[in-house]
Image (tube, rainbow over all chains, first blue to last red; front, side, top):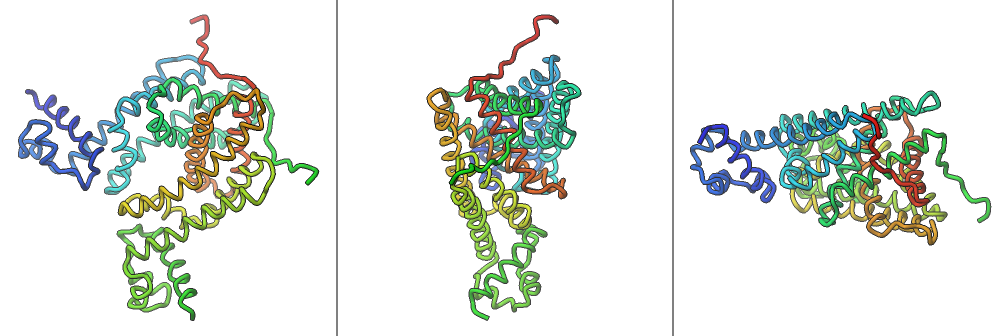
Length: 210
Length: 210
């Protein structure tokens, strides 16, 4: 078996074990055994438990960012359709690769600063992409659009945070498709943003009586 | 100085040190010195570094949840005004107690399962409160409202995730007031939800041409 293929196989198993046991609970013994490979060979290829974890993390982060960017770029249409495609790719990834998401989202921050930095970098790449789409969407609102770059950055943070949190909702509603989750989120955020662009504003109006 | 007061003083200092150095980097020596208290007395009162951290965490989590619940209940008006008051209390807390938020949000998950469970419990308390307000807001939409409890839970996850993520935006825009952040978020989410309740739906309509 070629080295590349062998490494892929080790990482596939390692992601499952890390997701199930956590970094500290996972053992290279279990990973080697589940992958049907000797422990010395795992060390030969991936150096250490930390090296193994980092390799998993980098591969899955690249996949996730790539899926988002690929979808958001490929659909090539209006900013809102590209945002929709990107969000759908994100939710589909989390739905299909739950183990990868658990490792990326829940476990990575526990470890070294190098690992936390790698995860933060992946997050920044996605946020930059989302911010571009939101800004483009605002620009399409035409000269009446009163939202600034600061607003676009605000919407981006809200949207990315909402998407993160909704992965928990998805885990509790396994019958819901990524398509459905994406549509609901677009409805909440994009419809709201469109209305705000049209000048509708929410204000805390206190009732006159009472 | 009464014990209660002395403990409060130790925790105030400990929060700052944990926020600055992280759990592993913080030393009881530095905390004792900054609080102007002997190290044995810190151990006498709070047992261990983990005990100290846990005491910080519990106090700040109670404060944050209390601030949210107090505001959301006290304003006593419509669900949307109560949600607004609760969100404002949250952003004001994070703005005024940045150190507490860093410890609660970024560091707690690194540690023991007991600590992670305490944080998860605080989060659940806030989410339950938000879900009640969202459900009440939907119910006020009257018989034409077509959103279910599942939808309310969805909106709650999105809203809480967005609020979490927006604390990063606030840190990068220190000139923005908690009031401004709250208004922007209400505009995005509540206006969007109102429109969806009225039957407006976002759909990924592909342009006919191209």
